[in-house]
Length: 211
Length: 211
DNA sequence: GTCTATAACCTGATAGAC
DNA sequence: GTCTATCAGGTTATAGAC
Image (cartoon, rainbow over the protein chains, first blue to last red):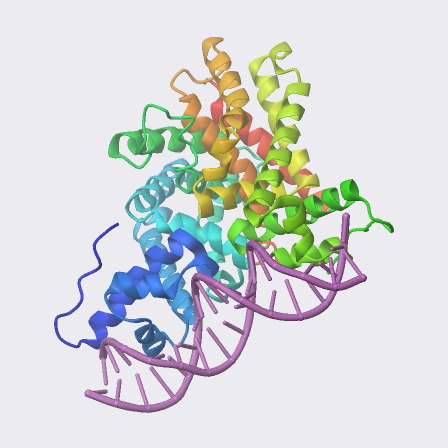
Protein backbone atom coordinates (compact mmCIF):
# COMPACT_ATOMS: atom_id res chain seq x y z
CA UNK A 1 0.00 0.00 0.00
CA UNK A 2 1.18 3.44 -0.90
CA UNK A 3 0.62 6.23 1.52
CA UNK A 4 -2.26 8.52 0.62
CA UNK A 5 -1.62 11.56 -1.48
CA UNK A 6 -0.96 14.57 0.66
CA UNK A 7 -4.05 16.50 1.43
CA UNK A 8 -4.00 20.23 1.91
CA UNK A 9 -3.93 21.05 5.58
CA UNK A 10 -6.60 23.67 5.10
CA UNK A 11 -9.59 23.66 2.79
CA UNK A 12 -8.40 24.14 -0.76
CA UNK A 13 -10.73 23.40 -3.61
CA UNK A 14 -8.10 23.28 -6.35
CA UNK A 15 -5.74 21.10 -4.35
CA UNK A 16 -8.50 18.68 -3.40
CA UNK A 17 -9.77 18.44 -6.93
CA UNK A 18 -6.30 17.76 -8.33
CA UNK A 19 -5.62 15.24 -5.62
CA UNK A 20 -8.81 13.36 -6.43
CA UNK A 21 -7.84 13.32 -10.09
CA UNK A 22 -4.45 11.82 -9.29
CA UNK A 23 -5.91 9.11 -7.12
CA UNK A 24 -8.60 8.43 -9.71
CA UNK A 25 -6.03 7.99 -12.47
CA UNK A 26 -4.33 5.32 -10.41
CA UNK A 27 -7.56 3.56 -9.51
CA UNK A 28 -8.98 3.62 -13.04
CA UNK A 29 -5.63 2.43 -14.39
CA UNK A 30 -5.74 -0.51 -12.02
CA UNK A 31 -9.39 -1.53 -12.28
CA UNK A 32 -10.98 0.32 -15.21
CA UNK A 33 -14.11 2.43 -15.02
CA UNK A 34 -16.35 -0.37 -13.92
CA UNK A 35 -14.01 -1.97 -11.42
CA UNK A 36 -12.78 1.24 -9.80
CA UNK A 37 -14.21 2.02 -6.37
CA UNK A 38 -14.99 5.61 -5.46
CA UNK A 39 -14.38 4.66 -1.86
CA UNK A 40 -10.80 3.71 -2.75
CA UNK A 41 -10.24 6.94 -4.65
CA UNK A 42 -11.55 8.94 -1.74
CA UNK A 43 -9.44 7.04 0.78
CA UNK A 44 -6.31 7.49 -1.33
CA UNK A 45 -7.03 11.20 -1.60
CA UNK A 46 -7.72 11.54 2.10
CA UNK A 47 -11.28 12.78 1.73
CA UNK A 48 -14.69 11.14 1.71
CA UNK A 49 -16.71 9.83 -1.20
CA UNK A 50 -19.05 12.80 -0.92
CA UNK A 51 -16.24 15.04 -2.15
CA UNK A 52 -16.04 13.16 -5.43
CA UNK A 53 -19.67 13.91 -6.10
CA UNK A 54 -19.23 17.47 -4.94
CA UNK A 55 -16.44 18.11 -7.46
CA UNK A 56 -17.23 15.72 -10.31
CA UNK A 57 -20.92 14.94 -9.88
CA UNK A 58 -20.41 11.22 -10.43
CA UNK A 59 -17.93 8.45 -11.13
CA UNK A 60 -18.47 8.58 -14.86
CA UNK A 61 -17.61 12.27 -15.14
CA UNK A 62 -14.54 11.76 -12.99
CA UNK A 63 -13.47 9.07 -15.42
CA UNK A 64 -14.03 11.43 -18.35
CA UNK A 65 -11.85 14.00 -16.66
CA UNK A 66 -9.05 11.47 -16.13
CA UNK A 67 -9.21 10.37 -19.77
CA UNK A 68 -9.15 13.95 -20.97
CA UNK A 69 -6.11 14.79 -18.87
CA UNK A 70 -4.14 11.66 -19.74
CA UNK A 71 -4.96 12.03 -23.37
CA UNK A 72 -4.08 15.70 -23.79
CA UNK A 73 -0.81 15.13 -21.93
CA UNK A 74 0.11 12.54 -24.58
CA UNK A 75 -1.03 14.74 -27.45
CA UNK A 76 1.08 17.69 -26.33
CA UNK A 77 4.07 15.44 -25.79
CA UNK A 78 3.89 14.04 -29.32
CA UNK A 79 3.68 17.52 -30.76
CA UNK A 80 6.77 18.55 -28.85
CA UNK A 81 8.79 15.90 -30.66
CA UNK A 82 8.56 17.88 -33.88
CA UNK A 83 8.22 14.78 -36.02
CA UNK A 84 7.99 16.57 -39.40
CA UNK A 85 11.64 17.57 -39.01
CA UNK A 86 12.75 13.93 -38.94
CA UNK A 87 13.00 11.20 -41.56
CA UNK A 88 10.24 8.60 -41.23
CA UNK A 89 12.49 5.96 -39.64
CA UNK A 90 13.81 8.50 -37.15
CA UNK A 91 10.31 9.72 -36.41
CA UNK A 92 9.02 6.20 -35.85
CA UNK A 93 11.80 5.41 -33.41
CA UNK A 94 11.25 8.74 -31.67
CA UNK A 95 7.54 8.09 -31.22
CA UNK A 96 8.18 4.72 -29.62
CA UNK A 97 11.02 5.80 -27.39
CA UNK A 98 8.85 8.61 -26.16
CA UNK A 99 5.75 6.48 -25.72
CA UNK A 100 7.65 3.79 -23.87
CA UNK A 101 9.29 6.36 -21.62
CA UNK A 102 5.89 7.74 -20.70
CA UNK A 103 4.53 4.25 -20.12
CA UNK A 104 7.44 3.60 -17.78
CA UNK A 105 6.64 6.74 -15.80
CA UNK A 106 2.87 6.39 -15.92
CA UNK A 107 1.94 2.75 -16.60
CA UNK A 108 -1.67 3.74 -16.09
CA UNK A 109 -1.78 5.16 -19.59
CA UNK A 110 -1.42 1.73 -21.09
CA UNK A 111 -3.91 -0.02 -18.87
CA UNK A 112 -6.49 2.76 -19.10
CA UNK A 113 -6.35 2.56 -22.88
CA UNK A 114 -6.87 -1.18 -22.88
CA UNK A 115 -9.51 -1.16 -20.15
CA UNK A 116 -11.38 1.53 -22.04
CA UNK A 117 -11.37 -0.55 -25.21
CA UNK A 118 -12.39 -3.70 -23.42
CA UNK A 119 -14.91 -2.50 -20.86
CA UNK A 120 -16.45 0.44 -22.65
CA UNK A 121 -15.58 -0.44 -26.23
CA UNK A 122 -14.09 2.99 -26.72
CA UNK A 123 -17.22 4.89 -25.77
CA UNK A 124 -15.40 7.53 -23.76
CA UNK A 125 -12.32 7.57 -25.95
CA UNK A 126 -14.56 8.42 -28.85
CA UNK A 127 -15.79 11.46 -26.97
CA UNK A 128 -12.30 12.86 -26.92
CA UNK A 129 -11.27 11.52 -30.31
CA UNK A 130 -8.83 8.66 -29.97
CA UNK A 131 -7.82 9.30 -33.58
CA UNK A 132 -5.29 11.92 -32.53
CA UNK A 133 -3.46 9.17 -30.69
CA UNK A 134 -3.03 7.15 -33.85
CA UNK A 135 -2.85 9.84 -36.49
CA UNK A 136 0.73 11.03 -35.84
CA UNK A 137 1.83 7.42 -36.18
CA UNK A 138 -0.19 6.85 -39.34
CA UNK A 139 1.19 10.04 -40.86
CA UNK A 140 4.74 8.90 -40.28
CA UNK A 141 3.97 5.51 -41.79
CA UNK A 142 2.36 7.08 -44.85
CA UNK A 143 5.28 9.44 -45.28
CA UNK A 144 7.70 6.53 -44.96
CA UNK A 145 5.91 4.46 -47.58
CA UNK A 146 5.71 7.40 -49.98
CA UNK A 147 9.38 8.15 -49.46
CA UNK A 148 10.43 4.58 -50.13
CA UNK A 149 11.66 3.96 -46.60
CA UNK A 150 8.95 1.53 -45.58
CA UNK A 151 7.44 -1.52 -47.20
CA UNK A 152 5.10 -0.31 -49.94
CA UNK A 153 2.48 -2.95 -49.14
CA UNK A 154 2.23 -1.71 -45.57
CA UNK A 155 -1.27 -0.66 -44.53
CA UNK A 156 -0.87 2.33 -42.20
CA UNK A 157 -4.02 1.58 -40.23
CA UNK A 158 -3.45 -2.08 -39.43
CA UNK A 159 0.21 -1.39 -38.88
CA UNK A 160 -0.29 1.47 -36.44
CA UNK A 161 -2.82 -0.52 -34.42
CA UNK A 162 -0.42 -3.46 -34.25
CA UNK A 163 2.46 -1.27 -33.17
CA UNK A 164 0.46 0.40 -30.42
CA UNK A 165 -0.58 -3.04 -29.24
CA UNK A 166 3.03 -4.04 -29.00
CA UNK A 167 3.87 -0.99 -26.95
CA UNK A 168 1.00 -1.44 -24.57
CA UNK A 169 0.75 -5.17 -23.98
CA UNK A 170 3.99 -5.72 -22.09
CA UNK A 171 2.94 -3.32 -19.37
CA UNK A 172 -0.54 -4.74 -19.10
CA UNK A 173 0.86 -8.26 -18.75
CA UNK A 174 3.72 -7.49 -16.46
CA UNK A 175 2.24 -9.33 -13.51
CA UNK A 176 1.01 -12.17 -15.66
CA UNK A 177 4.48 -13.15 -16.79
CA UNK A 178 6.21 -14.29 -13.65
CA UNK A 179 6.50 -17.78 -15.09
CA UNK A 180 8.47 -16.42 -18.05
CA UNK A 181 10.78 -14.36 -15.88
CA UNK A 182 11.26 -16.59 -12.83
CA UNK A 183 14.51 -14.79 -12.13
CA UNK A 184 13.15 -11.26 -12.33
CA UNK A 185 10.03 -10.42 -10.38
CA UNK A 186 9.69 -6.78 -11.41
CA UNK A 187 9.34 -6.16 -15.13
CA UNK A 188 9.12 -2.44 -14.49
CA UNK A 189 12.55 -2.26 -12.89
CA UNK A 190 14.90 0.16 -14.63
CA UNK A 191 17.24 -2.37 -16.16
CA UNK A 192 14.63 -4.79 -17.42
CA UNK A 193 12.55 -2.02 -18.86
CA UNK A 194 15.57 -0.45 -20.60
CA UNK A 195 16.15 -3.78 -22.33
CA UNK A 196 12.50 -3.91 -23.23
CA UNK A 197 12.68 -0.47 -24.84
CA UNK A 198 15.67 -1.43 -26.99
CA UNK A 199 14.09 -4.68 -28.14
CA UNK A 200 10.78 -3.00 -28.87
CA UNK A 201 12.18 -0.04 -30.80
CA UNK A 202 14.30 -2.40 -32.87
CA UNK A 203 11.30 -4.59 -33.60
CA UNK A 204 9.11 -1.65 -34.53
CA UNK A 205 11.66 -0.33 -36.98
CA UNK A 206 12.40 -3.72 -38.49
CA UNK A 207 8.75 -4.57 -38.84
CA UNK A 208 7.99 -1.81 -41.31
CA UNK A 209 11.26 -1.54 -43.23
CA UNK A 210 11.38 -2.03 -46.96
CA UNK A 211 13.45 -4.99 -48.05
CA UNK B 1 -28.86 -9.36 -28.86
CA UNK B 2 -28.11 -12.92 -29.87
CA UNK B 3 -30.66 -15.57 -29.27
CA UNK B 4 -29.99 -17.77 -26.26
CA UNK B 5 -28.06 -20.97 -26.70
CA UNK B 6 -30.35 -23.87 -27.28
CA UNK B 7 -31.32 -25.64 -24.16
CA UNK B 8 -32.04 -29.32 -24.13
CA UNK B 9 -35.75 -29.92 -24.27
CA UNK B 10 -35.49 -32.44 -21.47
CA UNK B 11 -33.28 -32.46 -18.41
CA UNK B 12 -29.74 -33.18 -19.49
CA UNK B 13 -26.89 -32.53 -17.12
CA UNK B 14 -24.11 -32.70 -19.69
CA UNK B 15 -25.91 -30.50 -22.17
CA UNK B 16 -26.77 -27.92 -19.55
CA UNK B 17 -23.25 -27.82 -18.22
CA UNK B 18 -21.73 -27.40 -21.67
CA UNK B 19 -24.28 -24.76 -22.51
CA UNK B 20 -23.42 -22.78 -19.39
CA UNK B 21 -19.74 -23.01 -20.28
CA UNK B 22 -20.37 -21.62 -23.76
CA UNK B 23 -22.40 -18.72 -22.46
CA UNK B 24 -19.84 -18.09 -19.76
CA UNK B 25 -17.01 -17.94 -22.27
CA UNK B 26 -18.85 -15.23 -24.14
CA UNK B 27 -19.71 -13.28 -21.02
CA UNK B 28 -16.22 -13.48 -19.50
CA UNK B 29 -14.74 -12.53 -22.86
CA UNK B 30 -16.91 -9.46 -22.96
CA UNK B 31 -16.65 -8.29 -19.35
CA UNK B 32 -13.89 -10.22 -17.61
CA UNK B 33 -14.27 -12.17 -14.40
CA UNK B 34 -15.25 -9.21 -12.30
CA UNK B 35 -17.60 -7.57 -14.78
CA UNK B 36 -19.37 -10.72 -15.89
CA UNK B 37 -22.87 -11.25 -14.51
CA UNK B 38 -24.01 -14.72 -13.58
CA UNK B 39 -27.55 -13.58 -14.30
CA UNK B 40 -26.54 -12.84 -17.90
CA UNK B 41 -24.83 -16.20 -18.29
CA UNK B 42 -27.90 -17.97 -16.96
CA UNK B 43 -30.24 -16.01 -19.21
CA UNK B 44 -28.11 -16.72 -22.26
CA UNK B 45 -28.11 -20.40 -21.36
CA UNK B 46 -31.82 -20.45 -20.73
CA UNK B 47 -31.60 -21.57 -17.12
CA UNK B 48 -31.53 -19.79 -13.77
CA UNK B 49 -28.57 -18.57 -11.74
CA UNK B 50 -29.10 -21.41 -9.31
CA UNK B 51 -27.95 -23.84 -12.02
CA UNK B 52 -24.58 -22.17 -12.22
CA UNK B 53 -24.03 -22.80 -8.55
CA UNK B 54 -25.36 -26.29 -8.87
CA UNK B 55 -22.84 -27.22 -11.55
CA UNK B 56 -19.88 -24.98 -10.79
CA UNK B 57 -20.31 -24.00 -7.15
CA UNK B 58 -19.53 -20.35 -7.79
CA UNK B 59 -18.62 -17.76 -10.39
CA UNK B 60 -14.90 -18.07 -9.75
CA UNK B 61 -14.85 -21.81 -10.45
CA UNK B 62 -16.90 -21.33 -13.58
CA UNK B 63 -14.27 -18.85 -14.71
CA UNK B 64 -11.50 -21.35 -13.97
CA UNK B 65 -13.30 -23.92 -16.08
CA UNK B 66 -13.61 -21.50 -19.00
CA UNK B 67 -9.93 -20.62 -18.80
CA UNK B 68 -8.93 -24.25 -18.67
CA UNK B 69 -11.02 -25.13 -21.70
CA UNK B 70 -9.92 -22.14 -23.78
CA UNK B 71 -6.33 -22.68 -22.86
CA UNK B 72 -6.11 -26.40 -23.52
CA UNK B 73 -7.84 -25.92 -26.87
CA UNK B 74 -5.03 -23.53 -27.81
CA UNK B 75 -2.32 -25.83 -26.51
CA UNK B 76 -3.53 -28.83 -28.48
CA UNK B 77 -3.87 -26.71 -31.59
CA UNK B 78 -0.27 -25.50 -31.38
CA UNK B 79 0.96 -29.04 -30.94
CA UNK B 80 -0.92 -30.14 -34.03
CA UNK B 81 1.10 -27.69 -36.13
CA UNK B 82 4.18 -29.84 -35.71
CA UNK B 83 6.48 -26.85 -35.48
CA UNK B 84 9.75 -28.80 -35.06
CA UNK B 85 9.40 -29.99 -38.65
CA UNK B 86 9.56 -26.42 -39.95
CA UNK B 87 12.33 -23.87 -40.30
CA UNK B 88 12.07 -21.10 -37.69
CA UNK B 89 10.70 -18.49 -40.12
CA UNK B 90 8.10 -20.96 -41.36
CA UNK B 91 7.21 -21.96 -37.83
CA UNK B 92 6.81 -18.33 -36.75
CA UNK B 93 4.48 -17.57 -39.63
CA UNK B 94 2.56 -20.75 -38.95
CA UNK B 95 2.06 -19.88 -35.29
CA UNK B 96 0.65 -16.48 -36.13
CA UNK B 97 -1.57 -17.59 -38.98
CA UNK B 98 -2.98 -20.20 -36.70
CA UNK B 99 -3.38 -17.89 -33.73
CA UNK B 100 -5.04 -15.20 -35.82
CA UNK B 101 -7.38 -17.74 -37.38
CA UNK B 102 -8.45 -18.87 -33.95
CA UNK B 103 -8.88 -15.28 -32.77
CA UNK B 104 -11.09 -14.67 -35.78
CA UNK B 105 -13.26 -17.63 -34.88
CA UNK B 106 -13.22 -17.08 -31.12
CA UNK B 107 -12.37 -13.44 -30.37
CA UNK B 108 -13.01 -14.18 -26.72
CA UNK B 109 -9.60 -15.80 -26.44
CA UNK B 110 -7.90 -12.48 -26.94
CA UNK B 111 -10.07 -10.46 -24.59
CA UNK B 112 -10.06 -13.12 -21.89
CA UNK B 113 -6.27 -13.14 -21.94
CA UNK B 114 -6.07 -9.38 -21.61
CA UNK B 115 -8.85 -9.12 -19.04
CA UNK B 116 -7.16 -11.81 -16.98
CA UNK B 117 -3.88 -9.90 -17.01
CA UNK B 118 -5.52 -6.61 -16.21
CA UNK B 119 -8.20 -7.55 -13.69
CA UNK B 120 -6.61 -10.51 -11.96
CA UNK B 121 -2.96 -9.87 -12.77
CA UNK B 122 -2.64 -13.39 -14.09
CA UNK B 123 -3.78 -15.08 -10.89
CA UNK B 124 -5.89 -17.71 -12.64
CA UNK B 125 -3.64 -18.02 -15.66
CA UNK B 126 -0.84 -18.90 -13.30
CA UNK B 127 -2.92 -21.78 -11.96
CA UNK B 128 -2.98 -23.33 -15.41
CA UNK B 129 0.54 -22.24 -16.37
CA UNK B 130 0.41 -19.47 -18.94
CA UNK B 131 3.99 -20.37 -19.81
CA UNK B 132 2.88 -23.05 -22.22
CA UNK B 133 1.21 -20.34 -24.26
CA UNK B 134 4.49 -18.51 -24.71
CA UNK B 135 6.98 -21.33 -24.69
CA UNK B 136 6.35 -22.69 -28.21
CA UNK B 137 6.91 -19.17 -29.48
CA UNK B 138 10.05 -18.68 -27.43
CA UNK B 139 11.42 -22.01 -28.57
CA UNK B 140 11.00 -21.04 -32.21
CA UNK B 141 12.67 -17.70 -31.58
CA UNK B 142 15.60 -19.34 -29.81
CA UNK B 143 15.97 -21.87 -32.56
CA UNK B 144 15.88 -19.10 -35.15
CA UNK B 145 18.55 -17.09 -33.41
CA UNK B 146 20.78 -20.13 -32.98
CA UNK B 147 20.30 -21.06 -36.63
CA UNK B 148 21.19 -17.59 -37.85
CA UNK B 149 17.73 -16.84 -39.22
CA UNK B 150 16.79 -14.21 -36.67
CA UNK B 151 18.54 -11.17 -35.31
CA UNK B 152 21.18 -12.40 -32.83
CA UNK B 153 20.43 -9.60 -30.37
CA UNK B 154 16.80 -10.62 -30.16
CA UNK B 155 15.62 -11.40 -26.62
CA UNK B 156 13.14 -14.27 -26.92
CA UNK B 157 11.17 -13.23 -23.87
CA UNK B 158 10.56 -9.58 -24.65
CA UNK B 159 10.06 -10.46 -28.28
CA UNK B 160 7.47 -13.13 -27.69
CA UNK B 161 5.50 -10.89 -25.33
CA UNK B 162 5.54 -8.09 -27.88
CA UNK B 163 4.40 -10.38 -30.66
CA UNK B 164 1.53 -11.78 -28.65
CA UNK B 165 0.53 -8.23 -27.83
CA UNK B 166 0.44 -7.42 -31.49
CA UNK B 167 -1.77 -10.40 -32.23
CA UNK B 168 -4.19 -9.63 -29.46
CA UNK B 169 -4.58 -5.89 -29.41
CA UNK B 170 -6.36 -5.41 -32.72
CA UNK B 171 -9.24 -7.60 -31.63
CA UNK B 172 -9.51 -5.98 -28.24
CA UNK B 173 -9.63 -2.52 -29.82
CA UNK B 174 -11.89 -3.35 -32.69
CA UNK B 175 -14.76 -1.26 -31.40
CA UNK B 176 -12.50 1.52 -30.27
CA UNK B 177 -11.23 2.25 -33.74
CA UNK B 178 -14.28 3.47 -35.60
CA UNK B 179 -12.64 6.84 -36.05
CA UNK B 180 -9.71 5.22 -37.87
CA UNK B 181 -11.95 3.15 -40.12
CA UNK B 182 -14.84 5.51 -40.79
CA UNK B 183 -15.59 3.58 -43.96
CA UNK B 184 -15.61 0.11 -42.41
CA UNK B 185 -17.68 -0.44 -39.29
CA UNK B 186 -16.84 -4.10 -38.73
CA UNK B 187 -13.17 -4.90 -38.24
CA UNK B 188 -14.03 -8.56 -37.85
CA UNK B 189 -15.55 -8.84 -41.31
CA UNK B 190 -13.87 -11.47 -43.47
CA UNK B 191 -12.17 -9.14 -45.92
CA UNK B 192 -10.84 -6.67 -43.41
CA UNK B 193 -9.59 -9.41 -41.16
CA UNK B 194 -7.88 -11.22 -44.03
CA UNK B 195 -5.95 -8.02 -44.74
CA UNK B 196 -5.12 -7.76 -41.08
CA UNK B 197 -3.71 -11.28 -41.05
CA UNK B 198 -1.45 -10.60 -44.03
CA UNK B 199 -0.16 -7.34 -42.57
CA UNK B 200 0.40 -8.88 -39.17
CA UNK B 201 2.19 -12.02 -40.36
CA UNK B 202 4.44 -9.89 -42.55
CA UNK B 203 5.22 -7.58 -39.64
CA UNK B 204 5.93 -10.45 -37.28
CA UNK B 205 8.35 -12.06 -39.69
CA UNK B 206 10.07 -8.79 -40.58
CA UNK B 207 10.38 -7.75 -36.97
CA UNK B 208 12.69 -10.58 -36.01
CA UNK B 209 14.66 -11.13 -39.21
CA UNK B 210 18.42 -10.86 -39.28
CA UNK B 211 19.68 -8.07 -41.53
C1' DG C 1 -15.77 22.43 1.70
C1' DT C 2 -16.10 18.61 4.24
C1' DC C 3 -18.24 15.17 6.95
C1' DT C 4 -21.79 11.49 8.65
C1' DA C 5 -25.62 8.78 7.80
C1' DT C 6 -28.48 6.54 4.87
C1' DA C 7 -31.20 5.60 0.80
C1' DA C 8 -31.60 2.87 -3.36
C1' DC C 9 -29.80 -0.45 -6.01
C1' DC C 10 -27.44 -4.48 -7.67
C1' DT C 11 -25.31 -9.08 -7.47
C1' DG C 12 -23.59 -13.54 -5.85
C1' DA C 13 -25.05 -17.10 -3.25
C1' DT C 14 -28.32 -20.20 -0.59
C1' DA C 15 -32.69 -22.65 1.04
C1' DG C 16 -36.23 -25.24 -0.05
C1' DA C 17 -40.25 -26.62 -3.08
C1' DC C 18 -41.19 -29.38 -7.15
C1' DG D 1 -32.20 -31.09 -12.27
C1' DT D 2 -34.48 -27.02 -12.18
C1' DC D 3 -37.06 -23.30 -10.29
C1' DT D 4 -38.67 -19.43 -6.99
C1' DA D 5 -37.78 -16.61 -3.25
C1' DT D 6 -34.78 -14.42 -0.42
C1' DC D 7 -30.66 -13.13 2.13
C1' DA D 8 -26.27 -10.84 2.82
C1' DG D 9 -22.90 -7.95 1.22
C1' DG D 10 -21.25 -4.22 -1.19
C1' DT D 11 -21.52 0.23 -4.13
C1' DT D 12 -23.05 4.69 -5.96
C1' DA D 13 -25.25 8.58 -4.87
C1' DT D 14 -27.75 11.96 -1.91
C1' DA D 15 -29.47 14.70 2.26
C1' DG D 16 -28.34 17.40 5.66
C1' DA D 17 -25.37 18.81 9.71
C1' DC D 18 -21.15 21.40 10.67
